Length: 475
Image (cartoon, rainbow, N blue to C red; front, top):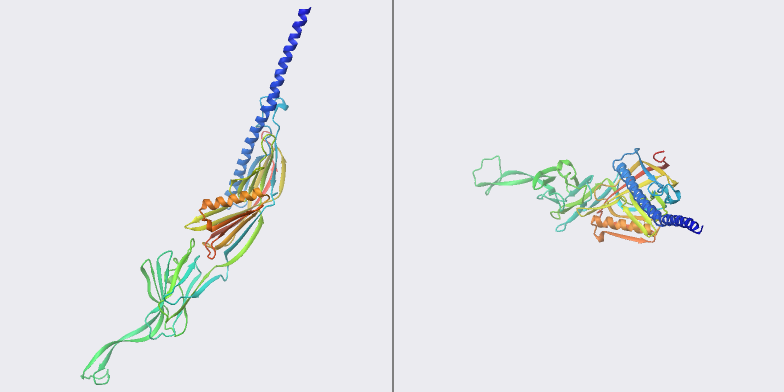
């Protein structure tokens, strides 16, 4: 009997030991395995969220760049892991599965603002900007800068003495751009004839006098004209073209060198870079001045607006929480240790032939919505309107200031990095711009004062956006 009782006890002890080993194994898996799988699943899911934001950005950029107003696009997001990517070896037992993460997707819940201030040439339908002044007396010269192709380029010229002059006037030639020359002259016109002179006698052309005589070739002034002569690349285009005939003394006359008849209209001005020309008088006998007129007017403006946003705020169980958001064409990641720019926003800088080029797309997501949970959602978007600020082409701006009023100091520093990186990649010299950050505000100022030496392009795009739940796949 004693031996039988001992055999039964050993079987019970063995079973308890096996059960204890199983419990220990499950406990170790619950302590180490489940968090590891949950962490891996949440990391994979956050990478997928980043990809969805990149897809959202690329889709919007495509619609805006192709000006596809009214065309709808959809981007799918999954709020949380949902358990699909975190299933472990013991998934048949619910307590041995990683906990499901959830998230919040919000539209236009960030109260952040951008202000664009500028001193630029704005296009106008009537009037326009004039540049004028006297043309310098010799030996000085007058410098005239064309930031764009002018409507007209007037040379006004006159002289108090029109009867005893040789050809005098104004010489105009470029210091930059294509090679050409223009002369606007006060040009006297003479008649040539033979004059009979009698030695010790009188002049009698109708008499046949054989007394000593001789002939002299003489010029008789008949009138004075305003003439234009031009050449292109050393080849004459016009020689002595009469712009005004038989002018009067002390009267001003005007020539428009933008007239296609003079052959310079294609060379005067530039749409990509400024052209500098010099004008000078041949002497002090003539009085001359110039006037240029453009289809724009210089104005200083300041335009603030709310930056739209699409945000994904995770509620992870095993991995650090991450906050992705789309704003102004860029993708940002906000974490507890700071903000990171994943894709720069639609503010681009370039340096073209030494001229700073600034392109800004103001992208506004219209709508307001918040959805929480762990299931799939669909974000639909369509561009409703694209409006470009009517600025003169070519060099149109003296200075532009972009100021970001962010939610936090970290967000402001992310914009600081954005501006600095864009300027460095464009090759902007440090003297061209300044970046300042104070608290939650960051700004960049780009300036070529006193000249209009910046090519600025501004475009505003409004995107209708909505979030709706979507049935999970397979249901």
